[in-house]
Image (cartoon, rainbow, N blue to C red; front, top):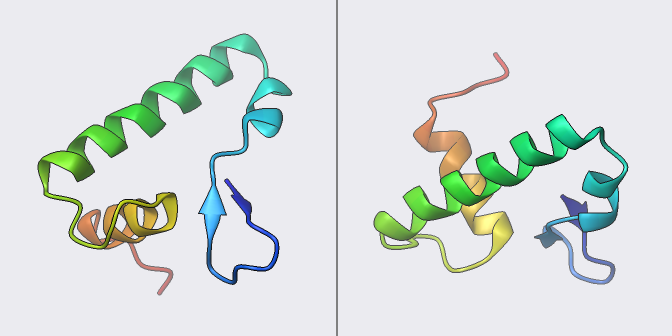
Length: 67
């Protein structure tokens, strides 16, 4: 993911960064990205249809915290 210039808190999938990874990690990242989007769509895209919204949903759905 990379931030979209001029749009705070707006992110997009960074294909260039993924392309720099070893092939096995590329497949893992793409599979995870697609799997999370599939789950988010099944949930009805409650925060909107953007990568940032999907990431927010995924973070809280996973009950992950930094504390």
